[in-house]
Image (cartoon, rainbow over all chains, first blue to last red):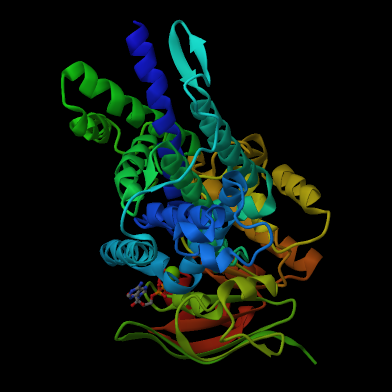
Length: 312
Length: 237
Ligand SMILES: Nc1ncnc2c1ncn2[C@@H]1O[C@H](COP(=O)(O)OP(=O)(O)OP(=O)(O)O)[C@@H](O)[C@H]1O
Ligand SMILES: [Mg+2]
């Protein structure tokens, strides 16, 4: 019983990462109506920028010499992460506004090709600068062996609590932006019907870039959390992307709440199913995929998504 | 002298290799209601879309003396043009009230709420369902919402593409009375594409006939009503 609870609590940490990436995928999809497969890589660039901001020059992290002139460098990892999240937002907006300007206008097949091309380019960029060995990222929250809350004999670690506070805070801000600001309403109108949005005087290009900025920030949050748990290397977010995609498909692309719950479910399936089905831990992705396939068969629009209504 | 709010000069438009408009000329004077009559596929929708730069065109479109043929759609709307597209184009995932708020996106005054309430009074169905997703409205209710949403921008010029499509006869009459009222009270000029020629000519000042991408006739509403060719083609006489 304690073992089960412990597994669930351990799965919650990964859940926060998948949730953040899933919401990022959902927001960029809302902005441009196409899946941005480079979403994880954009976040990873953010995490490497955080590392560069927090590393002394002698640590040989690309970028740290660049930032060495800034007063106060190297920064604390937390401050560096906050700055890097903003950098990732600008990076995402820039990619959308300049490189992916016509993304929303492409047909699905060409959009997929373009999305894969962007994934490869951004990945090549970070491999060129930060490739090679995996590096220590550092801890964002107290994570010694004593930093936990005991729950019926199981341990809920501070890192898990911290990760969820951050993820829920960021998602809450995004939700408030969407539901109670003028720009948020315009963004939802754009998602609902692009042509009618333009016919209401809404400029789509700016909002698309804004959507990619928000999702860039969310992806960088996910990447920093993932890096803080293990090591940071250039393939970190590629692995995570698969779970993030599973999570957002599970929850439904049009629901933030769905994406968050999708992240939790995928992470739980990842930890629980192999354990109880006797699969080796390298096969942990199978658990997530089983759940995904079941949902796609029964509810293709996602657990929390809205069933499409066609009126004639 | 009458002032032209809209002047379309030699506008051509193509879908791929097929030219749909072969050079359209038409004018809407300030305060006028102008109707466009034409058979299916004549190019009525394409003409309205060309005015808002929703497809690539050649020729000139002047709004209030300003060339807007290279201006993007959203900016044209911000200049005071409201376009109710054929097939409504409501935001199905947004609530009825949110649809109305988006309609007022280009406005900066504090009378938006009052305007929404005024429309909800005029169309109580919309008021009762203001918190529901617009996608849950019936086709006719969505058409009312589309018109109300467009009017929310307090436009100087309204482009209406078959606003009566799919509505019950009584509702259509009411809708046209609403157009006449908006036109009179707010001075909004209108360019209306309509299959329901009888009703449209009743509220219109002038009209154009369009056939396979060309303007083939024009006149005052009375002239068109009494033209035997028009009667045969559009008035079912
Ligand atoms: N998206 C499109 N792609 C290709 N051809 C099109 C497209 N839209 C319209 N056309 C063609 O352009 C011509 C004019 O179409 P348009 O929609 O303007 O007609 P309409 O007068 O509005 O007809 P209706 O009364 O049926 O609405 C038609 O021949 C039509 O087939
Ligand atoms: Mg038409």
